[in-house]
Every structure is written in C-alpha cells, then in structure tokens.
Length: 258
Image 1 (spheres, helix red, strand yellow):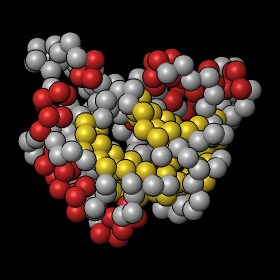
Image 2 (cartoon, one colour):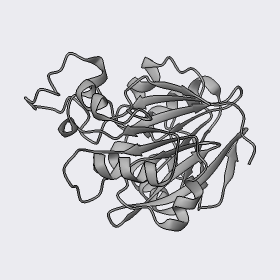
Image 3 (cartoon, one colour):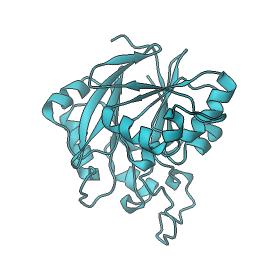
C-alpha cells in the first residue's frame, strides 16, 4: 500500500488514570517536568490531505483544543475500554462546523460498545446536537482513509483482542501484552514502532518496560517510542536516560515525521 509523507502527533501518552493521577502523592505526579504530564493515550496521523485520530479518550476535547485542530476526517478505534473511547461525544463540534458526518472505524467488539455507550447517536429517533457518525466496521483487512493506508494488527490485552495499526512505515500499538507471530510479521519492516510500556513491574495485560524493549529489538525496528505510561514507570527524564539510543519515551505533544 502506497503511503504519502506522514506527520504523527502524540495527543496523549498516559495510561487509563493519566499522569498525574488523582489523589496521588508520588514524585512523578508532583513533577514540574511537562513531559510527566500525560493525558490518556491517542495519536493524530496526518498527510497533506487527510487527518485522523486513533482513539477518543476522556481527554479528547482538550486534546483537540490544545493542538488547535479545526478539521478531522476520521477516528479509528483500538478497543472498547473507556480510556480510549469515552470522548466520542465531542465529535459533534466537528459535525457542526464541517456540516458532515464523522467517519468512525472500529471492529465488531468496539462497535458493540460504541452503540451501547452512545446509543443516542445510533437511535432511529434523533435530536439536534447529537454526534453524527458514519460507522465503518473493520477486520484485519487493510484499508485506506483518504490517502493514508491502514493495516490492522491484532494484539492481545490479556484476553481481549485489541487492534494496533500500521500506517505506511509507522506502527502504533497500545494496550497489549502479547502479539502472535503472524501479526508480528505485519510489523516487520516498519521504520518506527510505538509500543505500550506501562511500568517496570509485571502487569496482567500490558507490556512492561523490559518486555517492550525486547520486542522492539526482536522485530528489528530502527526506532521505538513507548506510550501508555503510568506514574509507576518513573520520571520521564530518569527513565529516558536508561533507554538505548534508538528507543525513547514518548510524551504529549511529540511530533514525528516520516
């Protein structure tokens, strides 16, 4: 699939509770470093003609305001957890100004949750001001959004299937702790991979820092960035200093170009 030059913006790089976490007194949550302030995980992918967002978590409204996004073509969902879809209602602002429905891409599991949680957007009886959505059900088959190629990658979040996505030579995977060999083949050849690394200690459904580093090297990806980070991982500057030269912690506002 041919891919135009892309610009990737990290809208949020935190785990479900964000950083700082409510009521927490730890040094990370009280850090003055702006890179230790993490909204819920999401990225924006842009070509010269198309702009999409992966996931619309609880911070979606502020993420759009913070980056001064005036136009959005689509939202692509990884899975149905609230920290990845709770902000979908705020799509209605884009509906109002663009005068069109928003294209939404989700697998069957996530579609079920979207229809349940945002039932009013899918009701036969609609009222003014609700989100206007054009829902596209996706599988593992590649597809295009505008001129941006999208290859779904099925990963495992404990027992939940989650979709990662490859956009040209860029791969984005969040909320995973296992990737089967056939899906790893879809990742190989990427120039950049973004992978979740929740903390250093073992976790039921997320890669640890050590596991993420090992997988990036096993896949032989030249550059890796870590996301979906919790306050338990440590301060950004201290963890960054421990990483190999080709791997970095992502942070809110980071921009990559391919």
